[in-house]
Length: 233
Image (cartoon, rainbow, N blue to C red):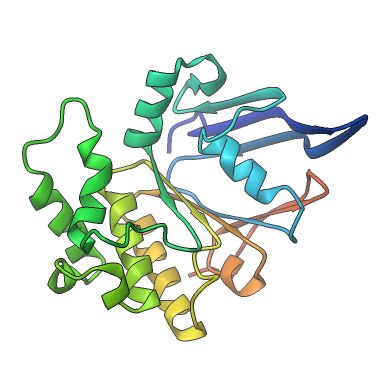
C-alpha cells in the first residue's frame, strides 16, 4: 500500500440550513482510507453515512473541510476535471440498481465508457468482459425487467467495473435483495477487493458490515468507532 491514503477526509463538515436552523449532516470528520481496503461505513438512517458517501464520491461538496482522492483535493477541481475523476476513478453501486430500463445489460455497462475522452475503441468487448466477471455474459442482451434483482445488481456492479476504477462506492448494495442473493453480492465484492479495488460499502446492517475488513461507525454526523474486523474473510 502507498504511504499516502487513497482517500483523505479532513475536518469534513456538511451543513444544511433550514430557515434559522443549521443541521449538521457531518460534523468535523477526519477519515483516511488506504488503497486496497474494504471498509464498511455503518450507521442508522440519518446518521450522515450517505452524505459522507456523496462527498467521497465527489457527488457533493462539503460546507467545510476537504476530501482528497488520489492526491487531488476535489474542492479545487473544475467541473470537467471532477467528472473525469468520477468516471475514471470511482465506480458507483446503488441500492435500486439505477439501470436504464430500455437498454440491455450490455448497453447499461457500456454507458460510462461512452463518456470517456477519448472514447475507447473496444467498448463492447470491455462491457462483455465486465459482465463475464460478474457471471452474466450470457445475459448481455437482456433488459433489466428480464433479470432478477440479484442479476440486476450484478449488472450494476459490472457497470461500476467498466471504467476500471480504483474505488467502488456501494450504497446499501443488498438493500433490495433477499438474504441468499445478498450473500452472493457481498462475496463478489470480496473477490473484487482481492483484485486490488478499494471497496467502500455504506450500510445500516451489521450482517453486511461483517464482510468488511474495517468498520467505521457514524452517528449524528460524527465517527463514533473505527476498528479492524478481525473476523472478516
